Amino acid sequence: MIEAEKLTKRFGGRAVVDDVTFRCEPGTVTGFLGPNGAGKTTTMRMICGFSTPDSGRAGVLGGAYRALSNPGRRVGVLLDASAQHGGRRGREALAISAQTMGVEEGRVDDLLGLVGLDKSAARKRVRQYSLGMRQRLGIANALIGEPEVLILDEPANGLDPEGMRWMRGLLRDFAERGGTVLLSSHLLHEVDAIADRLVIIGSGKIVAEGSKEELLSGAGTLVRADDAPALGRALAAAGLPAREADGGGFLVEAEPRAVGAAAQGGGVALVHLAPAGDAGLEQLFFDLTTDDGEEGK
Amino acid sequence: MSAHAIDREEMDAAPGGRERRPGPARLTKVELRKMVDTRSGFWLQLAVLGLTVLAVVITVLAGHSEDKTFRHVLSNALQPAGILLPVVGILLVSSEWSQRTALVSFALVPQRPRLIVAKLLAGIVLALAATVVALALAALGTALASSSAPDVWALPIGLLGQDVVYVVTAMVIGIGFGLALQSSAPAIVLYFALPVAFAALGSIHALHGIVEWINTAEALEPLTTTVMGGHEWAQGLVALALWMGVPLTIGMWRLTRGEIG
Image (tube, rainbow over all chains, first blue to last red):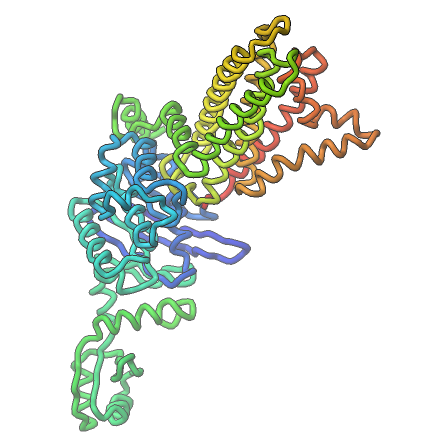
């Protein structure tokens, strides 16, 4: 379990993280979503005891991270995939972590296999690793102590589509066995497919939180017609707030039933009418995380 | 203390428990490993060894006959360790920041001072090992030189102790600089430049009386050459306290107060 309670952090007078509260329960994957600079990394650093909050409290497994006596065996942390010594071999980097937390070194080879780093990659110095390989090494490092909780900052960054599918399987499996996962991303599609719940942060504040379905229920309807101007007029006539969606058509803040009725009223033939779905989530994410998130509230 | 906290402590005390806190011995072993398992660390250790051999060879081949005593060869053999081991110490700490491994190390050992204590212990172990190697190489060189000088093998026990102090404190000072500056290049530059600056200050007549107490070159120079008397020890200890104490104190303050990464 991971908890953040009224977490606030200021740098030079500016609140980088502002009154952030959320919980991650065992058995779930929580996607921590927000644009670059929204405060995701600072929040995760406070959870792991690298940074001290100005007010509020963060905890893991019912207490402060720093109170864990052998944290590597309970919480797997990946805060920056580049945070490995470039002159050290990949396998050696894992072996050091294993030795620190008292895990037999044989497990290192199992982990290298699990994350798909072969023998030649394991022998290479980390300096020669691509970002994707560093992410895999970092995830192996987080998993080595068989933890109950995973805290991963931008783990999908640098992974190819195959790597993304692999990570999705890995994290889903981890959660299904009762683990708690918090992973951050600035890209919606990265967390969308993995996470059960989303916590969306913009300019240091939590702007939305909930399951994808809960978030989407407010996302509106996507409607398209060949005669877009006529459709626009029909929606305006019906008093439905609409705006042009990416890829044509309108995103309407109303139920599909009402939108269909408005189109009929205007005599417009529709080619698409459905809940906004992913397009709505994309728009929601964009709305929530710009203009301090106020517009989307 | 809550009941929960007590349970947790009992769990920690259980031998072999997965939640048992990594002890100082284990952390020290890990830090020793970290000193030699990187490319730079490996070459630095090899350089210390190579230069020690070179110092012995040159002394034995080129020195005057009366200089080919164990005591003199050893004094020269210790110089590479005295000069380069502090760089090993600096890198042991500063690379955690410059290579950003602090984000991994302190995630596993969030009680930050415990990790630094392990680094100090590891540094001391390495310094002692380097002293033993220098002793062995100096003995070998002295035997091969087979000088006719009187008391070839005489080594006052006090001088041996001073040699150990010289190498160990050099290592600790290096670790202090690495910790205080948290950055490799500035720490190495300052480590070598500051004593030169102090020496320059010492050339100002009015300051000389003070500088001879704090300038390492002057105050610590007798450590490897002569059995020191009371006054020399006083100057040496003041200089050591200053050069070890100030960087370590600043470094620990930064470490415990500051943000990491």
